Image (cartoon, rainbow, N blue to C red):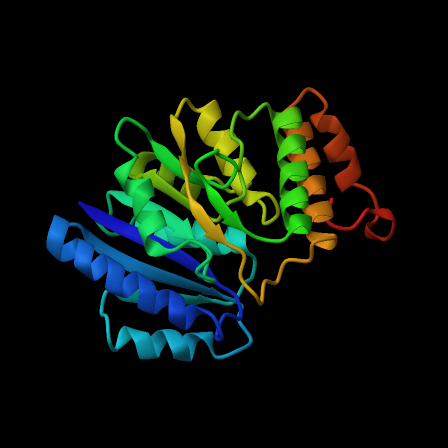
Length: 258
């Protein structure tokens, strides 16, 4: 059994070192105890800092750490490219987790432990058993966005946005092959796509820590994500012509990010 842990990294020189250290120590123990092979796959996306140098220094300590450096940006793009690359090797399970160590390695490992009988597992901060350490403002924003998602797309999941998800090889292929996935609301789109194709997804309780240095703007980002969800819903409805008409409008009068 082999596991690929994809970590998208955009300007993460100050945070990714602790993540690589924690995941390396934990999964080395798992590899020896449970005979599970793994790779920690960093997808550096359009970074402007020394993220690559930090990754290189940790790779000297653990050869299970590999990376690619992309010229284009965007978390969704980085994860998709990561999936394409990971599928070239004999990985049975491919997942992704944020670079900020908001999800500790033992919590990511729970996704693997709970995948029996399912095609994918997703960490959920909204389940009763979960423990979440974050601000009230971020909690309200997250719950509000999830309400919009469930209302528009009829997804049954209580938390679509937690940055830790794991997939078997077949659904991972579907994600990698889809060319219409956007940066904003990327997680929502892949869950909708997998559910539509009959894949079984399980939410797993998690412990999650809101980390300092987050690049998410709590006002701008939810608006961008909401617009992306609305657009995605229209495309997957009889009203897809609205999006086509919108796309033909001059750039000067378009609503940015819709």
